[in-house]
Image (tube, rainbow, N blue to C red; front, top):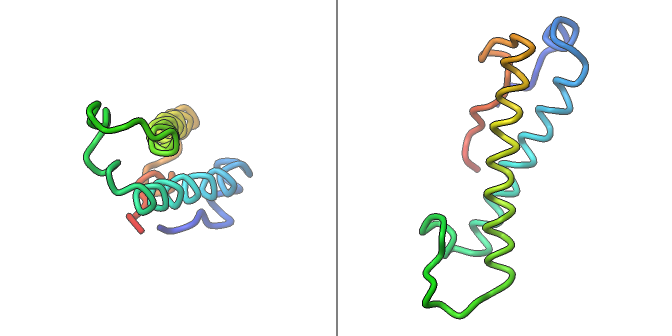
Length: 94
């Protein structure tokens, strides 16, 4: 991940730097939740035959809502006409 440069921030807005931080936090959160709850890596809609575990279901909800926020950020970058090379939306997996 390459953070926005000072020129990027000047050209596209001061919010770009904190949005980059937000996206990094979203990725780190996803990674931590997957590590804490390996069953989540099976995909959405965990096996209904398993006993309910509120922590797992809430972790799944956090991951899903984080993905929605990622999409909103992509749309925000597009609305500002920020080039993909500047918009940080393809973060590496930790």
